[in-house]
Length: 490
Ligand SMILES: Cc1ncc(COP(=O)(O)O)c(C=O)c1O
Image (cartoon, rainbow, N blue to C red; front, side):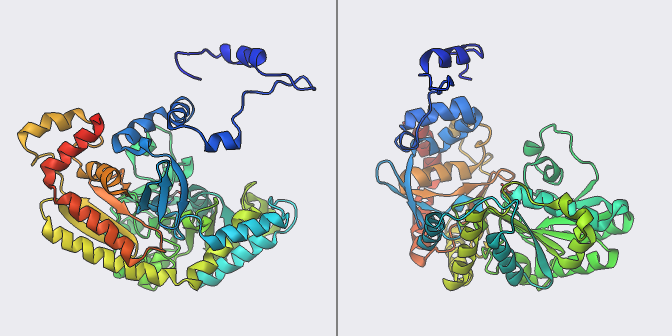
């Protein structure tokens, strides 16, 4: 409802009066067509976003200048906006764009699939596409990670993971250990093991869980020893929402050993860090260990579709769901294994290896880290930390709320609470406005910019990004703040 301009009662009346009647007597609402949607003005986009999608979010989009961009096309590493401006994508949809935008092989595979009138919904008959995708994932996943559940979001894959883990652990071992600053999704089950007060709100969540600091093996050991009801451990292998936080290989080896010792099912959430982003297909492979269950999403959809997978060790799966009696408990949802999304994922997995994108993530990631570390040396008062692996990199700025000159404090104080004290919002907004570069922000740690460019990224793209950042930081904090404030007025 458009607040202040119409009431609940106005809407059906207006539709009856304005809409032309069809032969059957059903009135056709005033619908926007596909072509009209593509041609929509920024002003209309803003109005409909505010009236029908998320008015609160628009507030942040305005602060960051995102509301001024209408993306017309996207190809490879770049968006192109309504003015023909090319925007370098170092945001990468939080890791959803391993193949870049509109990879030609993915487009061709989808087009061929459509032209051949292939079927989509895989509920009644067996699906050759779902079968092939599951077989491919089992071939890629190490050890006996062989059993696959297909869904359409990371949250859904993680829901499937904790349900499977709970059944495998048994009714007496239903307690879950999870990490501080974790993010596993926003649906209600996984929200219970997502550590963000912002997301948790005041929902009534599952209370059978125990929180430990990320990367703290002693805390996990103590929890396992103290509480025999603990049966499941859920960890992102590299924390994304937490601000790109990883743990050393020894930590994961000890996790494996502790889970084996205590009979705990280990779930590795690879929704953001998986699909080659860290320089291995799964980030846990850097430690040479295999979890009991893992989950993929984001880039598995090839940047063109919604696709997610939970992959479990066969013995764990069989324990939970292996018989005809239990099969339906865990059968996929309506869109699980949908045809075109499956063939998109299949083509994507083939591209990943044909184009050596996993190695490329290592090579370009190392170069990006090298350039960022040089900038950290050059601007130690601005950059606090540079960290990450492959093309999953965090750039942490100093918290400048205390060091800002007195004259600027009142100006900054009137800006939104979310950005106050945080340079990353200012820098992100100016990178977009002045350098045509898009980066991602981090809810849990507002000082961190997340860099997750597509894995097709080349050295020249890294240089374009690092040169832009260098030039911007060269302005100094005071001018950066002033320029940001100017961007809010202009
Ligand atoms: C590590 C991790 N797990 C799960 C999710 C949830 O995925 P989705 O947004 O597709 O539901 C995300 C999303 O950002 C994520 O980063």
